[in-house]
Length: 214
Image (cartoon, rainbow, N blue to C red; front, side, top):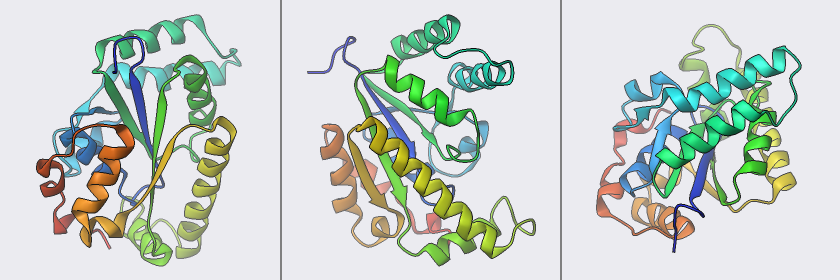
């Protein structure tokens, strides 16, 4: 039984354009208190994911600490994290698609795992790496990056996440973007079983074909 003292924290990890926002929306429909760390998750078309300024404060504060060579853990940061956790549901979390690109993300997430004891990871992938790279090149980085850069970015980020997960040995579920459009119920049930939450058809019906950004 999950209580206030053993809440589950779910972190959705993956390179952008691999389904992290879709996974956040699915978890939201499964009753997980998923919040957005950045405001643009609200305009991505992936459901009612609430932007959480308090959650983003953790990353802003960590960035300041990094630039000023402050030590982890920091008392103020720990106090803020505990307050955020207390205010959330029994299963809560956020999506993080910039762990390899932001120097602050890795040390902060490492520190969070030292403070929070019941952490789970949903690791998002795409089976077709070339389609993933093309999706990145057509997205926010359209016209600004080469396909080679996009391919290398995917490889680098997945390696960083793998290293991170191996180091902390937290429970993980690997999911693949394409599978949600071929066997949606099966994939949603995998997530529900992994987090030990009830399956809902609303979560399956949340998946729409226009989410396939190939």
